[in-house]
Length: 93
Image 1 (cartoon, one colour):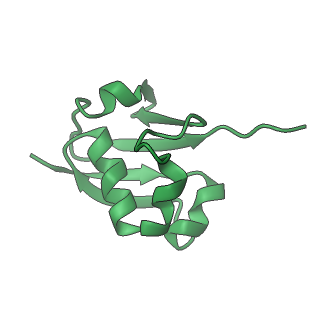
Image 2 (tube, rainbow, N blue to C red):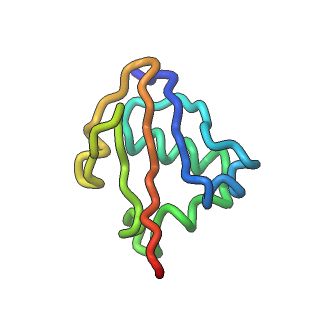
C-alpha cells in the first residue's frame, strides 16, 4: 500500500526539482519515495545514485527525523503524512 508523503531535498539539489524544496509523492517505502522523486524529476537521478545504482555516499536519508540506512530504506514503510528527507553532506573550507 502506498502513502502520500513529502520528500524534502537540499537547496543544492532543488534546481533539479524546479526549485521545489519539498515534493509530494506516493510510495510504500523510503526507497520508493526517493525513486518516485527521481521519476518525477529525472535530472535529479544522477545526483542521487552512482553508476552502480547505490545511493551516493554523501547523501543520507531520514524518515520523520530518524536516519534510515540505504540497506533498510527498501523495508522502511511509510504512513500517510510521513516526511522523507534527503540530506546532502557539504564539505570544504
